[in-house]
Image (cartoon, rainbow, N blue to C red; front, side, top):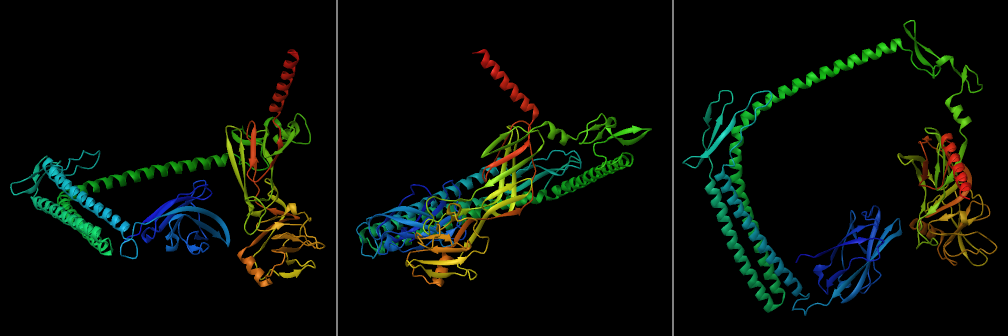
Amino acid sequence: MPELVHSIRIIFGAQTQPSITIQQSDYNSRKIQAACFTSSGQPMDFSGATVTVVYNAGADPTKEYPVTVVGNVLAFTMPGLAAQTAGSWTMQIFIYGSGSLLHSAEIPYTVRKTITPGTGGDDPVPALVLLIQQTQDAIGECNKATENANKTVANIEKKLADGDFIGKTGDTGPQGFQGVGVTGASLNGQGELVFTVKDPATGESSTLLPVDIDTSAAITTVEQAAQDGVQKVQDAQASAISAVDQAGKNAGTQAVSEVYSAKDTAIADIATVKSGAESAITAAQQSAVQTVQQSGTTAVGQVQKAQNTATTAIAQAQQNASTAVENEGDAQVQRLQEIVPQPTADNNGMVVAVQSGAYQLENPAGLVLNDGVITSKNGWSSMQIVKTLCPPFTVSGATVQCTPVANYPLGVQVEITPTQEGTGDPSPENVRPIVGWDAVNIHQSNGDQDNTYTVQLGQKVYGGTISISDGVVRTNYAVAEFDGSDDENWNKSQHESGKIYYRSKVSKGAINASDPSKWMCNRLQPHQYNYASIDYPTFSIGFQSDRITVCIVLENESTLSVEEFKVWLSENPVQFVYDSDLVNLNFDPKTITSLSGTNTLYADAGNITVSGASDPIATITALQNRVSALESAQTNM
């Protein structure tokens, strides 16, 4: 008997999940397929993950059964013990990654009491009802196939009678010559298809050789196939009804076998009827279409040949014209380069003037740029003018606003603070991954324009200050990762109080200060080390006074050897971020230019600091508004 598949949709993080109903001891309805999605509606990514399921019904409610993963779909079959007892139960789905529990979902299911069983080991009555329904559905599909075959026959007869196989004369094209067109088609007295064609050059009409189309044979074949199909369906239906009656009397495995046989016979008959009808229809269609296609092949080939010749000529003419334009443009540019002086760093700011019929460079009005002096013959550069007349500003915050001189480079710094996912104290059961940043996005807007700058840092950074225009990250955070590798020299010690702890030295920089509030760990709780009392809680981590030795306490009286502890680390890797000496890291700098008007800026990694030159017009306008407000307030007093 074919299995029934329960298809459900699981949303991880949702408060409720879909439920499943299973018939007691019905082993044919235990297959489950679950499409899995995140709380935001995105398909779950199970790459590198292991999925298991636990049922709280049965003899072993803690046993984890494997689950097959295909994309974001979980496929598994419920064991017999989990569907043996009637009642309401739950199954728990666990998602593991790198040895840690990532997600879980609880799916309720109900086991309904079975109907009084027959003589067989399993209850055949639900399966019998299902097979009866499937047999009736198969009979209905066969009737539909027969009806479709009759419709197809009628459609072919109508198209032949209406002359739908007659082609249409093509319109005269703008170039080339008109191909031979089919102007008429008819059936002669012998039942053959006769085409009439017209030569557009001479206007003469001619008749092609008759084409033998055995339409009646095709129609007769379809009708006979349909009649045979109906008869076979009726026979199959009678066999199915007889099998059902017998099954009702015996209520055992013999009834199920007979219904299966009736179902298989009906399905086989359906396939035979469908195949015969499709073959007859296809043969009739192909015969008529092939004849028409063969008659028009020569004319179509001649038209396509003329079109290809014209297309090639047009393409060549376009290419020649384009080449001529490009050549003339290059010649003009060459002539300009020969007579006009080229810009260099030395003549930047000078203008091109005509003297004695030739182009020459000279300063406008004899002006010489000199940021150190002010005379009638000396002038400041635009940068010196901005620095002198536009007061500097600096703003900081999560989101900042400023009104700088337009198109002026801004100084931008972003503060990065280490963060962790989740809530509560970290532990092996409550894993809280530490989030680092390998890129920072800075958003800038003035209401009319929106810019986003993505700055690649080149490596993972967990905290510090990023100077965007300088290309420097100043970080005082280091990360240590312990996974039980051979290069981790762990040893086991016992304090005089009896507590057991494991020690190893970090390979990166030492801690900068013994302040656990600046430490983060994904699986253990950071704690201040104190040898005098070694008051470490269970599952904690800290530094000894040498600032480079890490101590880990799993339990107050741990019985794990050093090798067993390293195995535990390999299954539960520890990530430890702590404050360390200041280090400068370099990356490709990026220039952020101010927009006109009020600029709003923020970064996705933390607070932002922006500095630049204030727009004097905006400053004056703001002062005028304040004076007007004061005057208005004084007038209203």
